[in-house]
Image (cartoon, rainbow, N blue to C red; front, side, top):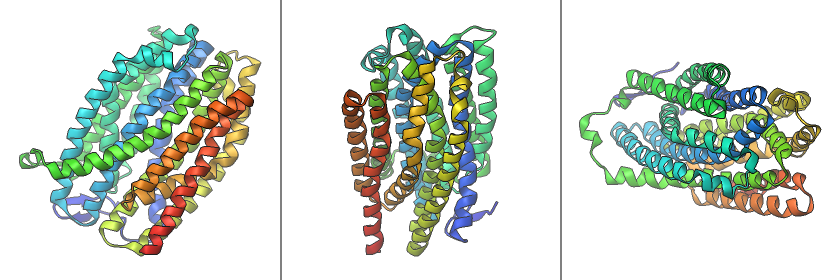
Length: 450
């Protein structure tokens, strides 16, 4: 690993030097690995719950997981916004500003953790009612959701530290500790569900404890490895400028990410109306669909760190080259994922559900037939939206998120009335297309000015 000086701090990888395609590929690989193991978290919960407890428990986890994902989206977006500011400071070698911004991100993250945990845990039953979760699975859904949301602090800790490390150019440490915690997650899932008989609550508790471990280990290693993380007492004073910068970009990106998830919540609510078989089939399909979402999301981290560091260094031409290289990597990856999904589609439902009904297979297959061919649209969206955001334009990505939200909500509700379940599923690629048009045009205009 290349170590570059940055004042008294260090960058793990200097993204302002070297050929763009190899640099981005090497940086992205650990992030992809980390996201795959993050997928492993949810897959382990779903697989073990479906095989050991049954289809009803799987439906309960699936029906609530979209709301949990909504919270995760906000946290991921918010901490990603913090990392853009930090990466800019790292690229311009402004160590003191970097430390102030790390402190600001810690204060904001702590406050957000308290607010999210309190509100979501207090109103979990009302949320379940609003999502139209069938009464037969509502109690299991409540148990799973409350435990996972009570562990919001663990999610915030891991995402904050891992995004700080990626801003420093280190995408390996988050992967290493996520692998460790993922293996622990599987062990605890089996332990809590089978011998202890804790049901879906055991699966939720295993997820929280495992993610807490990965966050703590990541934090300890970051402190030991990077001097910029060892922040002196003087920097812990309240700095209004740093707080405003991080609040502004962090909340904008958090809101943008959560807005996208609101559309998925509406979609899940529409699917819930079709019964337990539809929920189970949709859940099994979306768990595998996360393969595409998370891997494309890996390029969000890569593009964000790359563009931010190079903008801080004043390397405009290199930004253009890096975005092209990121798009190429994303499209190649999407083609590979499409092939994998086609091969494994017949085995997805039996993997997650013991003794599934025939309708469950049909709902799962319909999801893949409609969504998988449009994965390249998601790759384009992730690359260009992040590039525009990292260049300082928050309006276009916000407009794209609003367009995506409106498309998902309107299409999933209206098409469900006329087409049924397939109409709900089609709302996803339709939303990607509208958002693509906005961010690609915005990026082209910004590059023309530069």
